[in-house]
Length: 234
Image (cartoon, rainbow, N blue to C red; front, top):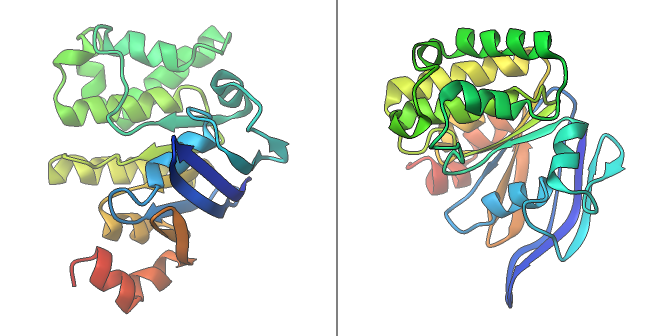
């Protein structure tokens, strides 16, 4: 579904990505793990065209994305829930959700998907008319994921969905990710909780200083002594 080849990204003179290549097969969960500054967020931002790569290829369902605008990429079925949530703090929960579907014209379908989001995250129904900036951190993260899902993506990019959240909220979000994956949506997941990410990942990549240094199934990396020492606190 997604094929990234030899991706290079610069921030001025700094080379943030040095030829990153990865693949996300249809319907699978792929995790990116690595230390802060390894290039994980930069990879997601380059895929969704929130920044322009220096060179390399990003192909989604056979189409090159590097020449498209971000809204065109959303229209093709790729959504991005960014680090820091990126919700509209001065708008209500419902307004944020509706903006996730801004390219759609099927009113009944949008209403049905809004109800689906409320079933995934019941607290959002209770907060539907509440301004998003007054939500707790966990509620804002739920809203970020739900808003991305409102575009009906085939592939969802998630950047640090559990960062700074209480354990019970983390469990809820990861259960939703499992449910979404079971419904056929592919996930490309950047997550500081490497253990959680590898538990649900079909495949994973380890990034260090802008390069892929290891890849394997989630189970293989969970069992790797190098990964356990560097990222799992063992």
